[in-house]
Length: 277
Image (spheres, rainbow, N blue to C red):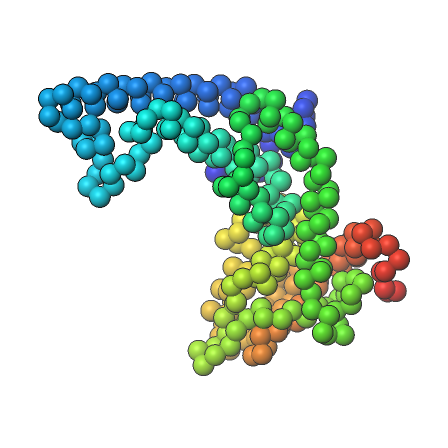
């Protein structure tokens, strides 16, 4: 699946260069054909039912999966559900290819995914796509900066190394790892998401493509802990991470110029609070 941003400059830099008209026309054509299929299945069901062969819900479903297909439901019930499923997938694909998800922190992505599954989706149309991505483009810096602020606010101020006013050369994070008789392991949850968010922000500030989740810092750290059980330090181009049996981890930043750019963003949102360097 394509994950890079590929854009339409005549409308908005976040809109895919793949023709919006083609997306909308393909979606509309597919729904029309699906409706025809449902109508044909209904006609065939009436025929087979008349000769004692049951309906499509009897002969078209695998054993144990009765009524699992929208294609065998009443058309007034099936088409809205199928339309929503198709539109949800298209919106998800557009967001992925636009690069907007990369700007979001874990909290924002969770909210977006929940809204995608449970919220009221705008129908796929040229006007709705253009309007949505124009709004997203206007807010993209706010989304990015909010991600940095959320990572910053998630730090524990129980340690003097962590300044409530700025990122320093090193931060201390609680509950990143776990230790038992088998050794260290990385804790699943919001601390792991926070570390991945922090790396994502550094990649974006450095103007570089963000690695897939399967290759982000949390995956590499898990592999390091698994493959080097006798070590308690992990290093890459952005971090030096020393982890301890009590669960804390000391993160030392290796690209201090990027940290200063993050501090500039913090100062923008909290003017007058940035600690002296």
